[in-house]
Image (cartoon, rainbow, N blue to C red; front, side):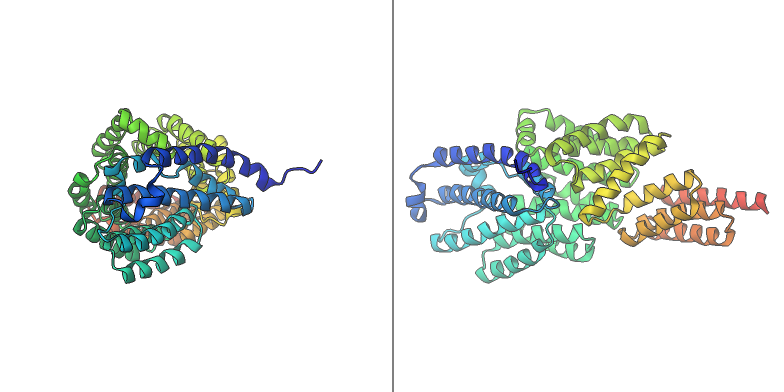
Length: 456
């Protein structure tokens, strides 16, 4: 008997999940109109919207099926994520929702050309969501094609996806520009889903640049265009993250509670069924907030639940699982459970290395564990690795503080002092000299200086 290949073993759960997606798509075609393929060119805009919706879903399903057939073992976990997140075909059955999500031009001939590009966009989105580096080039080409076609709602859809690729690559200036353009076009063309996605992207990019007040203004302003339960949950999670980073913890609690309350509604349950990662995101957000509140043990069940959900969806070797292993290990480390934290962290780093994923938070946490274990030179090497792969800004300031502690314990007082100065200056540049995070770093550096004084 010929043994199954590793890729084959990984593909089997994906194919099991593709079956129900294909059945749902076939049922949606039947529900919309069995005769629609013959009459689509002369059908009303609403029916053309449903047809575009169905065809886009089919294009994504077909592209995913083809890619799974040829995927290497390393590529399968990323594709598994997309299997679970194929867009719900139920939206295509509703003419109102189908047209809201994918506006149609009045001219059927133009509509057919728009439809052809949307099918390409569905395949490119698959690559973007599976972390395929080829996605950016395909989206850039689609942007040029959509601009040449002159149908603005399609431009907004492509721009939003291209901006997400740049955000994931830490190209914040490019992402900001593209999200802004996508939002402006979406609002002008009354394409609310495209505008809402771009707005959330803008808020996330502002968060990454520590521009919290601007992000908060945007979040308030764009709330009315988030109409579906899924959109409102996603906005609440973005606002939770914003408030948590800005240490407005009561505000963060309010937004995460809103998200869970929306999830408890019938519409929220339908959204979670259509997009399984939503529950993992909710549990992760609550765990993150509890860690920020220093309730490390309270955070563990939320992270463990999120991790189990992601393992069930994705298997073990996927970025979504790796990130949660790092978050869980950090909570365990901060809660004094280093013995269980380190294996989780080493599993995450090994998986990231195999997939070619940079993991700055993972290296930073390993450095903390090594410092606590008096492995000081290896800790400094881990901090350097974190800095080299990280997003800069506030992250670098926190790394500098960690380096200062390790350097102090090595007896390198001047190097430790310089690292502290860099930490304070970096945090002040990001958040302001009077921000609580800047005060906290200044206080910790003062404690290091007191130790130096005693040692001298």
